[in-house]
Amino acid sequence: MTEPSPRPSSRSGEREPPDPARGGPAADRPLLIVNPNAGGGRTGKQLATIRPVIERALGACELAPTAGPGDAIRIAREATQAKRSLVIAIGGDGTVHEVVNGVVEGGGTTPVGIIGTGTGGDFTKTLRIAHRLDHYLAAIKGGKECRVDVGLLTYRDHQGAERKRYFANILSMGVGGMVDQYVANASRTFGSTLAYASASVRAIRKSALADVRLRITSDDGKTRTETLATRLAAICNGQFFGSGMQVAPMAQPDDGRFELLVLTATGRIAMMLGMRQIYTGDHVKRADIRHEPITAIEASLVDERLTDRFLLDVDGEPLGTLPIKVELVRAAVAMRVP
Image (cartoon, rainbow, N blue to C red; front, top):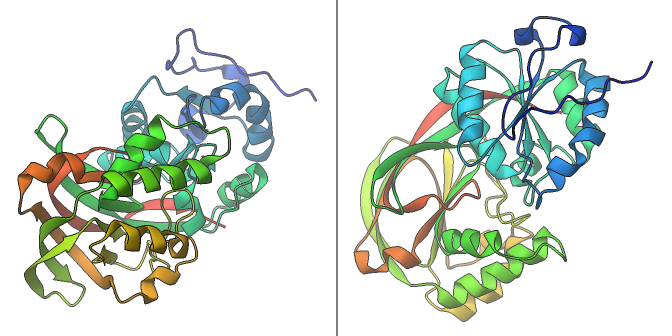
């Protein structure tokens, strides 16, 4: 039997109209939330090829392409409120980030599957899903779910307004936010790993050593305040960021805690020398790495003149700046896993 061809929307970002021929109520069909621009635009170009493969594995699906930043949040929120049986994020870490936000905002009841087609694919590494379409589909079709924790982040956007977002993977502050900005404008000709590595070197050169005031709640419930000089700190629910950097090899997204890692090395050269170790996770053995499990944290700059060089990287998204407040939301989203 010949597979039906995809029915494109009449406008970019518009969900396709219901098709009775595809069978079953809409709420029973998986909703494919697709970022056509992921992977430098490759996702949109490959969609007509991969959709029949997806539907052979999962049955008839409904397509919802995104029209721009934030659109996947709205689509996933509406899908969860409508009690959809499953939403699938097709794109990169930014698409997963937005779908998670929408599902949590909608009540957290709809499971989330992932088909990674973007630049980083870091959260799926923590979930142990190999970067192949058949592995993504096997994880989704198998029906096994892991209820992952998320962080509720309160931050300041680039215009100075207070905002809130959830994150499922990693929030870093300092060099990480600068890397995001550089990667957004970098060539992917030689692959995403090289793009992130070269952006990291550039960001370290431009980075600022800042005194960061931290109010930390450890996983034993005790709270304390201290100030640390750093160029990079990370609050980790997942293990990987920056296209394969294993910043928190001990992190588990369903264990009810974050892993806080702070680089206390003051020099740029020391930081660059440690970059290679981040890909293997060996950096955690270094004396200049502070690590502890936490459940909440607040962070602010002692010198706010450094704000523009101490930016946020939230699941790979350059959302804004300090000050921030992060709280753990336990078992917030059901993710399809192998």
